[in-house]
Image 1 (cartoon, helix red, strand yellow):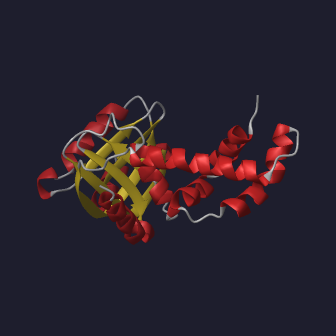
Image 2: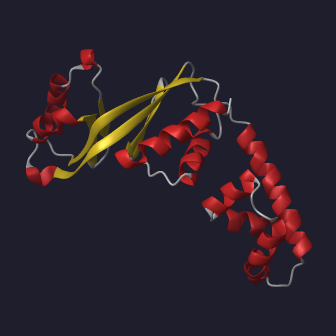
Amino acid sequence: MVTVSHVVKKLINERDFLQEAIHQGIVSNSLLASKLKKDIEMQIGESVSDHSIIMALRRYKEKLDKTSNKTSFEYFTEIDMKTNITYIVVRSVPSIKNKLLKIYDLVNFKEGDILNIIQGNYLNGIITNQRYKDKILNLFEPENILYVLENLVSFSLLNRETYLYNPGFFYNIFRILAWDNINLLTVLDTPRDFIILVDQKDAVKCFNSLEYFLQKK
């Protein structure tokens, strides 16, 4: 049997920013109930009272708060930011292995340069310092280079213990960044660090959001 609570949960889960606004406590339950009432009645097939919707919204917020509060971020120690990053995406071709191996010889890790290679089933992502862009592009045929993004910034959240078994970790960090309208170009995850790649124009907002994220200890 479809209940008011089930429909309220479904409608809010379909609206990420509304969900965050409820979690932040900046939404009037009575006004939101009036806004959702028509959709709820259409899905249930009968009229419902504003009071029942308001109660469902309150229960939803309580569950949302409990889920968010379960997540601990105490394992993160610092934010490592690197600028002038490029992100290159190429097709997987028969010679891709040898081409990717040559990139390791180009990057000077002793100087703190970075190289992250994401190997998918059909495409490969290469994230490294912008000064290596031309040399890397020369390794591939032009038709196999799908796109090149420049002037990017990477943020690495360094941690002292794994978060692999911490439910809600990805949800909480992504909702914070989405609330600030920050576009994530890609995300890399290892037991040692959690890396986010954004455009340079979003760098300041992203840093401020991540600082807020770290303060939620």
